[in-house]
Image (cartoon, rainbow, N blue to C red; front, side, top):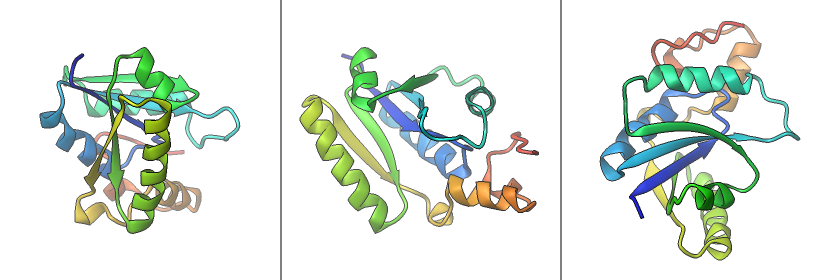
Length: 154
């Protein structure tokens, strides 16, 4: 089995924090699959197609990154792609507590899965997609929070 990790998320929108985690994970894995999760019960701010296109733009030319969409359980997605590692970024202690619980349940559902945590870079510790959406909703400028080359104009 290859050394492949899935970095799951809604990426609604992708932030510099997400980009940092992905770039820092590349030396650790033969491939990183960015799994854009689809939650039919949740209204996304940006379309799935927009989010996928932005991620493709950010990582254009990076052969070890694959961008896929999925719905349902992340462990089911991992099993269907022969993935043994789930990559998660941690900003705060609260993130750790939540992600630890999810990781433990994932381990019960799929014993061969391992969750790998990377601490976010300090400059991104307060950054989240929710904050970016709120700034956008109120007409603010989010350029410093999103990867270069991405236009989130509404």
